[in-house]
Image 1: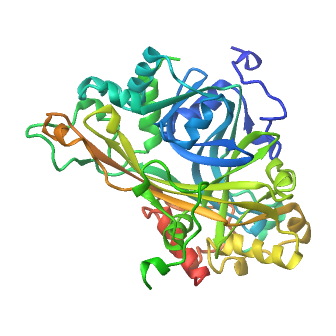
Image 2 (image 1 turned 45 degrees about the vertical axis):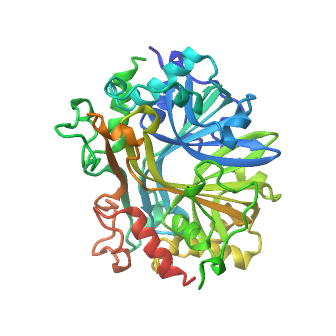
Image 3 (image 1 turned 180 degrees about the vertical axis):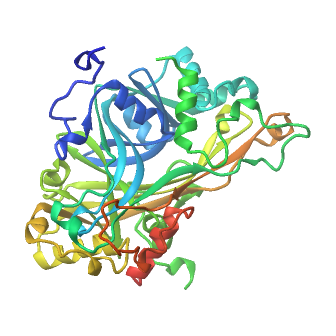
Length: 239
Length: 239
């Protein structure tokens, strides 16, 4: 597919990357890759002119994003009316120590996705979303669990937002000093950082003879969490 | 100091933790510990009713938060007028796999800080902030760098926000299933995650004989980034 034909989110004043435009991407592939590698996002919404920025687990299905919380959540009560929302995902990849203060920076991949969030109220759609809330991260896991009770479904609020606009912003160049500064006897480095899994800690109250299921094998000590999360997304969805 | 006398942020409808109130903390010690262990935050602001959620590097000085960007930044142009702002920091500590879908969760530490962000315009205050922007993370580093040029100071916008309200929300209990579910032969675990530093990558264009300065020793492969960041904060500030 020619680059100009690749599926892309529309670009306008809301989502165009203004600072460092060379870091901005709008195609589905770039935007979705950042989203699908994350378990956690920050959701921003407005009540009476006051912004709130709430961390939460989320996932993507096509151009739709899902997240959840209890019925008591201030955020979700507000969003039930279809409030304008911005959902942001950020992966910090490094700290960059340059030869002057001005060029100190960080490598990162982020997405800002804009739309109007709404409650999932249809019961079949809500049951399916609660299933995917687990199986998108741990494919096959719901079938291994105690069945969800109807009062648990009622106590869970699921929110969805169709992505109307989105931009990915990526910096990956490490140290980038002014040309003349490379001649100076000053130390500079890229310090990589990764969100890494530790050793799984089995529940101390496990029933005898219960072992870790094979479908969790992607989640293992020393691996980047984002690799396991992206792999699980690819297993759960084919788009 | 008695607990009721410990310095604390005021609590009202804006920042009171509503869902899972036992996870909410408002004292300076709890709020600042979460903030000072982070390099990156998400800042939320509103333009014409539309929320924006932007990742950025930040730091704390007393009850004041600082962050920065270029003059071209949409966020900062808006915030120069003292717009209501929410700055959120989140450390994801684990994914929690329970015996039912409803109890799947995550361990985390987060802070939502509210106030009105304003540009730092006084030139002496701005110069000091640009100094701390580097030295808060890498104590002593500015003295090792090429001096900042006046056009670099002019091209950098520094924003500050006094924390008017704040709440920390912490979950750290791992697997927490319903009592009767512990009897079921279902696997459950806490999967810890950490933001870990890799091996520093010295700039390939380093001047001959330049070595890594001793004041970067806290930033080393295999260590949690948050430990180095919190340690640097303690070295840079005494509060």
